[in-house]
Length: 177
Image 1 (cartoon, rainbow, N blue to C red):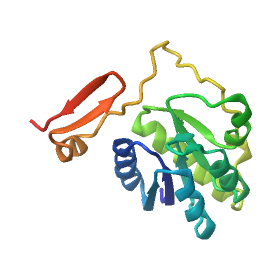
Image 2: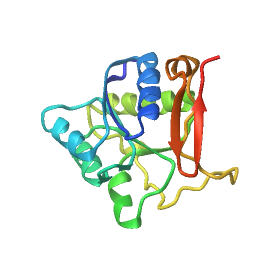
Image 3: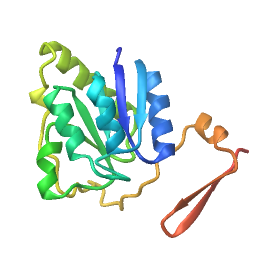
């Protein structure tokens, strides 16, 4: 399916790169990756994506204003996060589809395709059938602890050879073998 132009708002570079690669494989005609709310709001002043993927927390704050602009413009979006949002911010995110980090590529693809298809079928109206209220603190069904890393594809690992990532409390070394 043609996903069209996709906006990715993600402040973690390796996750953004991984998403860009997946989106190209899924049929995106173009991918615009931004890492701050301010950049996203500026970009949205003159542009309209066909679908968006938004991390609700980026370096310059919670993206409530960004998802409000997307909802007003009737742009379907995925809230892609490893953590919940505060109660007072959850209303703005309720217009999107929630996916927890990390997620399986097939689930991301299916979710994006469903959102884009519903959006097009409804004549560019917001897909209300897929809207829901995002939980303040989403829980994993398997009880596992959430983490902020995402698996890198083989191509991404090879391009990140000998790169060191610093995460809270530990260092992860990626090396091409």
